[in-house]
Length: 306
Ligand SMILES: Cc1cc2nc3c(=O)[nH]c(=O)nc-3n(C[C@H](O)[C@H](O)[C@H](O)COP(=O)(O)O)c2cc1C
Image (cartoon, rainbow, N blue to C red; front, side):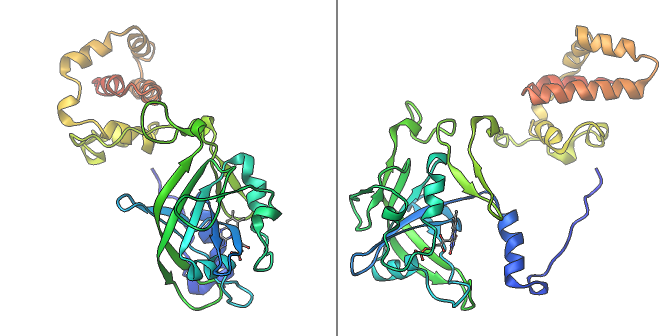
């Protein structure tokens, strides 16, 4: 496969604002933390942050980053609040809440409660002082363990490291009978570049088989006629390469594959043209790989056409 052309950029070649457009466009989709905080004086704030993720299982750690304001390098209210009261409730919103989440990102003056502006309901948290958004499908009450300033220029990040002490999940998004959230029932929204968002939808979800614990043969173990096929894609080859050597088809299985009606038909139809036979078998294998029939794909790909 030919390698595609790339544009190479040094951050210093562009203004920070222009390079940022590449950062947020490419690092996407980003989950969004809807963060509720409170000042020492008791004023509540609620704002979204897509510089956000989970960073540790034990302890359970979430991080997010309010950048300093580009216009005057001042600290956003959320950052000011967690410096005063090192506690936060981090919520995850679904599609039904995305416009209210966006409304809460408006730069209201410090002291304006975005719960009120965005029409959301305050629920008392169990372990921390900031209130929780009752409408959100998932919420994590956290104590702030550390704040790391990532620079001093306008727009520098401030990494807020948060340890989860309580979590709340709307019952209908949970998996039945085992721990966890059901991706088919949780329409989480996330952020891309520009004004773009994305939304989890069942039709966009798929699973990928984990790498074989027995260790698959890898791309370098694929026979050249398979690895160099101009039909099979990188995803197809990776599925084939995830099979361990001991599980590859035996000569008897390959011989049996040759006599399967569809395979026999294709071989017979193109008997005068081995290149076409190979192409047809690759297309059949590709279809089977898409259906998860990896062993059957291997069998037809190993048929000797010489
Ligand atoms: C979806 C979304 C994601 C955002 N992510 C961030 C972010 O990661 N960091 C940041 O500093 N601002 C981010 N913003 C902008 C802040 O939400 C915005 O500056 C807000 O007014 C800050 O509020 P505060 O000053 O009350 O804390 C985001 C806005 C939206 C709508």
